[in-house]
Length: 287
Ligand code: HSE
Image (tube, rainbow, N blue to C red; front, side, top):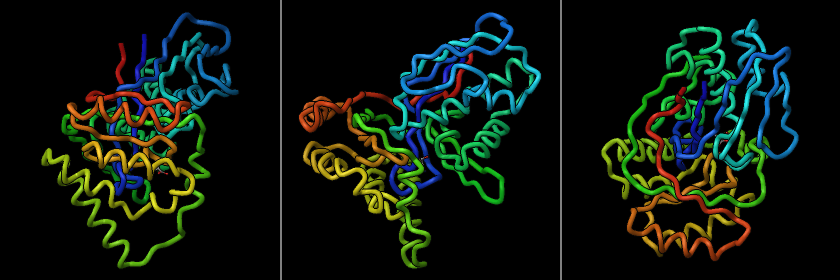
């Protein structure tokens, strides 16, 4: 059995902690033979555990404690701590692992609820499970969400070489904002979502860049956003925004503009990676 979970990009500007899309970069978990104790072989850099303390197994065993140990192979194309939902993908894979090996018969809704409780907000885990574009709320412990397809476009992920931890990127956000600002910020988000549902990416893109919830507070942590946005305006992209808590910047581009955009973005920093992606329509898959 092989489980495949997509990367995700949360927020899309004004949809802070609520909106996200699934992307065509993946985490794969291969379930191999029975063993005496759990073993995870992985290709991830850094100090990622290879035993039961790995987030994948912690998640799976919390849901199904009696699973019999196996050798697992974890391979990931999703860069770590870059704002592309790498830890959410592991949580979603852990839930699916428990679901399949433990015959839990979880519905999609069950998976979104469990994953959101574990992650704390639904904007990465919900699209990782459902695919496409997901709008979600997490209120008083309950998740409500709507999945919709995302209009056709190219997605460029500008991935800087340095990491940025979500905890650090959240620590710079204000405790509160004024009523007037909140009304303006939610109006922008509402139009962005309605424009996406209408397939109107030019309007959605304008709204994505008017976020009032988080990007301005995080700007000093992601100074490359300003230059990238300027290039995107010059080259005719729909929008650029901070992917999740950053530092990756996501650019939505009409197909015919992508080549020129990539050439310009490549000149900015030779350490950064620029990945050409598309929105994944499916979410988590089991083969
Ligand atoms: N909505 C979250 C944030 C996504 O921007 O902090 C990252 O976990």
